[in-house]
Image 1 (tube, rainbow, N blue to C red):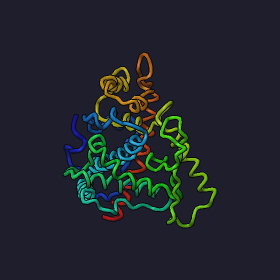
Image 2: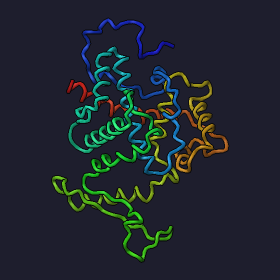
Image 3: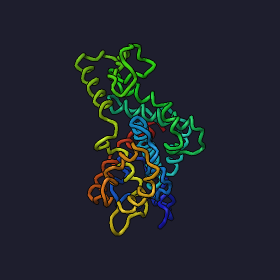
Length: 307
């Protein structure tokens, strides 16, 4: 199969084509992904090492934006915009802050802080590669720089459990039976100031996440769907089902999985006969693809506007 990143013939429109963002849409189905280069590094789509829900959240953000950068570069090259792809690489390697800018509102804030997070890790990793390293190889950096996400995304307030060192009341002992205490922080720089109803809504949402989001029961699917998406690249499809080869890889890594990681893959491995229905696989790929497409659109929009 010819590597699509290196076209065998020059486009008749090369040199005359204009970079139009709406023409560059990443595939969000198995058929389209099968035409992309295969990902051979298991660290891109199996995460047996994730320790807890906090690390899971960091990996989700980092890997979705890392994938968006990878696919944005591929899309430019597949559409014969090699010079633009090279310029995007140069700007990302130089950690050009303009690539993080977007419009207004919560989606734009989430994009900006997530891109800053990705760039901070890329810079701190000291890699000479265009693409930031896999999350497994930079776990300390993911933890170190995650503050830019929590500060940027919590517009009104933030809520977190108190650490043992912060507990000053002797009535509470650090045991499983002890009552949990939380620290509420109000962002004084928010303008206009949040209404009390907005603060209460945010507190309820964050408290619900802290209490329930332990990857117990039915885990969040974002990282699992990204795993499906990446595994679908290239020619891995089997004659039985697309998920068969994926299940085989999961089973080979099962003994290495942490309790959190087993929770992540519970829907795939929690049966006497592990399997993934085709419709489940295709739906997961679509969900991940749509999220990646939104990120890519903002990356390329900023890049085209600030070339």
